[in-house]
Length: 71
Image 1 (cartoon, rainbow, N blue to C red):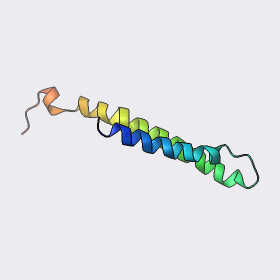
Image 2 (image 1 turned 90 degrees about the horizontal axis):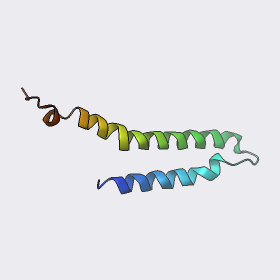
Image 3 (image 1 turned 120 degrees about the vertical axis):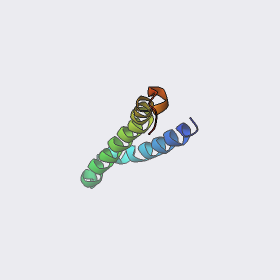
Image 4 (image 1 turned 135 degrees about the vertical axis):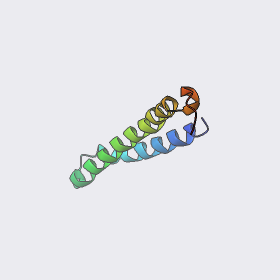
């Protein structure tokens, strides 16, 4: 819970910083815009994995929850 705010703030600042580059339609943006879109997608996917998938996997594999005795 302590790490939620810094993770969301980092993701938001990176995505908001890349948004103008990703949506640019002027000259010379044909090289930078696709890269910015990939960075945006990667940030959003990695944030979802960090905040949803990893904690869910941790809960599912927690030995205390499964009542498995360590050997």
